[in-house]
Amino acid sequence: MLIPVAAGVLLLIGYLMEWAGLELVGTIVLGASLVAGASTFVPGAVRRLLRRKLGVGLLMTIAAVGAVLLGHIGEAAALAFLFSIAEALEDRAMDKARGGLRALLALLPDTAIVSRLGGEVTIPARALRELDILVVRPGDRVATDGIVVSGRSSLDTSMVTGESIPVEVGPGDSVAAGSINGGGALMVEATADGTDNSLTTIVRLVEQAHARKGDRARLADRIAKPLVPAVLIAAGLIALFGVLVGDTETWTERALVVLVAASPCALAIAVPVTVISAIGAASRFGLIIKSGEAFERLGTVQLIAFDKTGTLTRNRPEIADVATIDSVDRDEVLHVAAALEAHSTHPLAAAILAAVPAVERATDVTEYPGDGVTGTFYGQPVRIGNPRWVSAGALADRLGLMEENGMTVVVVERAGTVVGIIGIRDELKPEAADTIAELKRHHIGSAMLTGDNTRTAQVLARQVGISEIRAEQKPADKAAAIREFQKHRHTAMIGDGINDAPALATADVGIAMGAAGSAAAIESADVAFTGTDLRLIPAALVHARRGRRIMTANIALAIGVIVVLFPLALTGVLGLAGVVLVHELAEVVIIANGIRAARRRPALEATAT
Image (tube, rainbow, N blue to C red; front, side, top):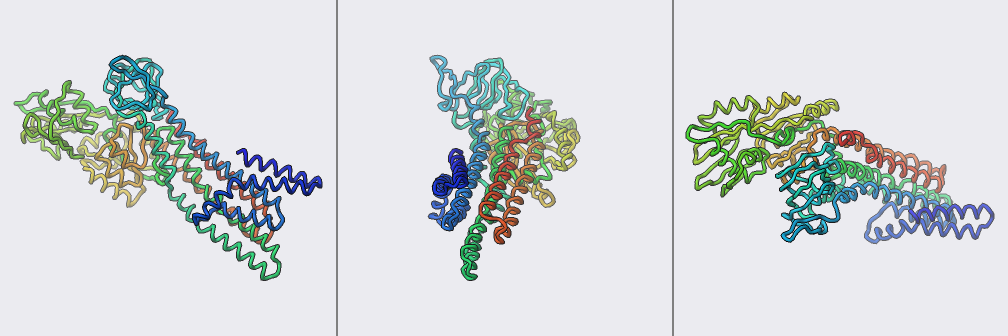
């Protein structure tokens, strides 16, 4: 800001000198003001021109040079000052919007305590490697992602996930980088390097989003790109008209004024400031939007399709019932199931593994997303999967009773014979029903897509308030359902598993839920929540809708300024100084309006607190 301020001070002194009758001194000071202000945009304009690119800076450069040639040094200096101050304000706004990312990285400590054979050692956090054992004392920040191997405590994850209630953790629980430990000491095994954890991934994704442009950004670009050469041609024709009518000076001056009046500088910044502000604000509440385009599409969503397991439910499934054939006992069935599920990323696998103290892994394991897992265990082929893939056989009646009680059932098969079925229940999240009701209040529909059986899906859907259900869905079926929804409404899909990836990629907006979601789901999604609080979903949609409104208003204002100023400049109603002042004031208004996307976020704040 120092150079624009210096240009402004010199401009004021120069005008005062001229007013006092010191014309020569005043002209020199105004010239110094012109040089100071022009130094902020002329070099960049020249560099772009050498690369055969036209920009707003070129229009301002031509206007300033033309004003000097016509003897209007004061007006040229005013143009340079106002344009430089607008450029500086834009840079400041962009930096402020990106400040949220720097704040996220600041959540990572500089050092970490690692347990070695010779004792505890303090090392730089960036030097942490996967499988290192971290010592996390009360009040410390967790330096990277990991799994608790000993100790119990509560973690404050509000700055990472937006969830204000501390999370109780113990052996086997995952912890996220940047979380603040409560009153108990923890030993944590790192699952990510210090420079490549969930928090650094968030920052990387948001930085990538800044570089990608949405529909409105492209609209602004499509208007601005041809407008620069069009303005140059129009100015040239106006000056040529002056030559033809014999009033070269008047019409050349008007050509320069038109050059400034029709410049698309305000249009060029109408969207980026808003997008960066909005995405940066969302990232501080656990909402990671991968691109400006995704942010804009998020604001158009009319229907959200929910995966059930791990999204609507707590993702803490527990075994509720086990049925076996006569010759096999309960533990035997669970050991076979655990041997296969040890290789699976499905949330239901955790329930089975939790019930088996010592897991022996199967070999030759293959996972079939949406169906189940096959492998070899003690030399015998084994298989576990849903009842559509593995028939329950003699246990079909027990399977029906389990499903009527809201359980998800998996069938265990050994050497081609069904040996048992396992009923697993994953309770709905307490905020699920309120979230669906809040979506309805904003006229956003809800649907459930699940690989679970129809009876279980219907029981849970009734409890949460969803009427549109697609059950027994394989990954391809979910993607097909999304395409069907898209015929009538802009549709978002939200899920967290491998089997959700095709639907996430197909939807207008794919939303990955929870940092514990599979890599396939996160990579396929356009938006990711680091937390699992469903109330963030309607808050995020409201945030995106408001951002779209701000973008639309900015584009309309930028175009309106050009439409109004052009005839005023052409007819001589406004001179160069007046046009420059109006133009740059419009830029300031647009920047301030765009920053509102970050400053006012009541919905997200209410959810986070």
